[in-house]
Image (cartoon, rainbow, N blue to C red; front, side, top):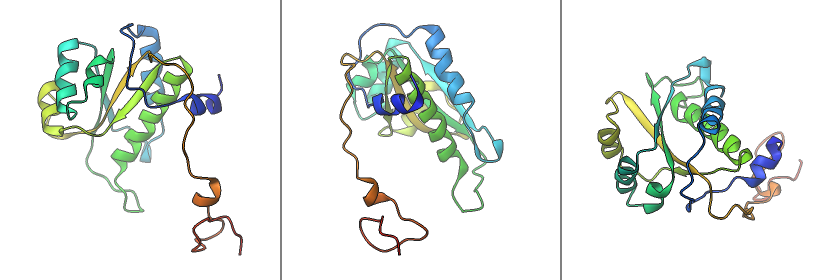
Length: 180
């Protein structure tokens, strides 16, 4: 499968089979995160892989009681050991860099027949306590991982390119593709 196929296949999965994720596949997914680019090659990302059912249930409660988090065979806490460095453009590095690493993981997971879901709805102090994460480490996202109960490809509802792309400069129109 090529990367474009993985992008088209990837969807947010909220129903998982109870099948364990093979260690080789998990390692391949984590390796994709490790190889992701980062600002100034800072590599601030850190990952906690959770397979224990009781811990996953606790994480589900900390994730606004989203039960499917506990049903996923693997939950990955995606964190950053950061000094809060800002890029020259003023954006903090760590959330962007961790997001790139997560996206690498989701695409490799899709290519391996696995499903994922980004979880941003969680209580950081609760997750910190459950996983014994030090206070100076930020928890950026949780990522569920497992075999989806429905492996079919979902039609994506996305804006047209004309609505999101401007050429040369912002042209002020709502559809964006007119060239001035």
